[in-house]
Length: 283
Image 1 (cartoon, helix red, strand yellow):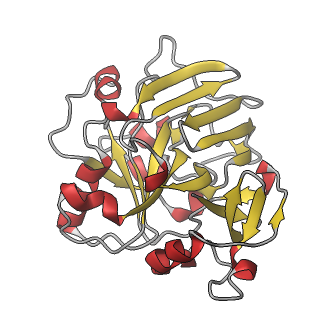
Image 2: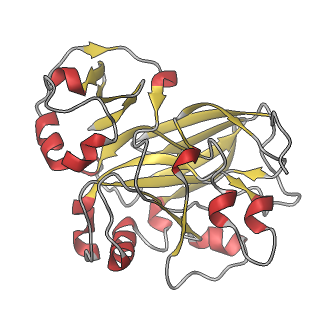
């Protein structure tokens, strides 16, 4: 099942088109894409047999499927080869930082580059569907509403300046957290823990791996995070990026105005973004 944000309204997506949830449910569920996660189990039961008029749509009409999560977790160094390319040991515990909601955008469109050191990081993103607190890994998938594609765009100068890394700030400029095109429910995958993930710049594949290479799987992340604090419905987890980022190349490669970035995850779809030059100097 695919759920998403069509011009600010929650919709179900089929091969025939999009079904507006508020209209098809006769108002049982509202139009807000964020609100369905607070009633996720009820929503999914209704959606299994939902019927309604389908309408055509274009990718440009899609917004972030989870537009206003209360908590955004991101995981660093969560693929072994990515840790190695950055000169890091495989972490014993998840490296957790935050991304800020003001950086969210949809799966297509233009993103402004604040500097000449912006890097790509394609990620699988997990969406929480039910409050999870101290949940063991073996039950964790029950608390995940679905999966989507994400980019953890990273301004490396801000991220790495000074003696103490500024992970959250360097990764939260406007547009630096695109997600989409849809949330795909966990039951739609034969193996939600082993999906091909890739990223290309101007047609050149720069990242390609499978999510089974993660150091901490999604169930393990749910268990580790919920051990400390409750995960709320509609929270999202950026689960880390595989090897192939631009910063560690020789010479380093960063995104430039006019570049097209395509981010893909098997069974979910792709995002396409182009980049523009900064319209204002950054102090």
